[in-house]
Image (cartoon, rainbow, N blue to C red):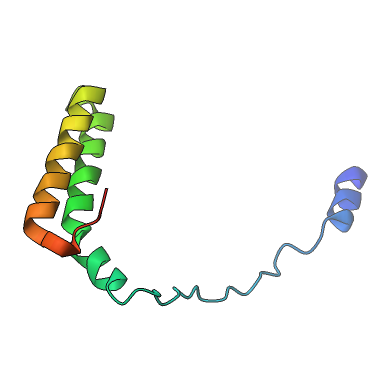
Length: 88
């Protein structure tokens, strides 16, 4: 019992907490960067859903299939967004 009391005296006060500052996202230097990231969100969502399906075991792991998906999405992105598409 005495050892626990001594250990409690040595530990710092855990009730004090740090104040968190809100994170600020810096403004993009390129005026088209914000619009481009907004327009490419659906394509990134498709990539995320494919990766989630692979991790869940719904789609088999395959480097070739992942490459084909990436190539298809890049082509689709270039066709839909034109000059606003990301250059890969």
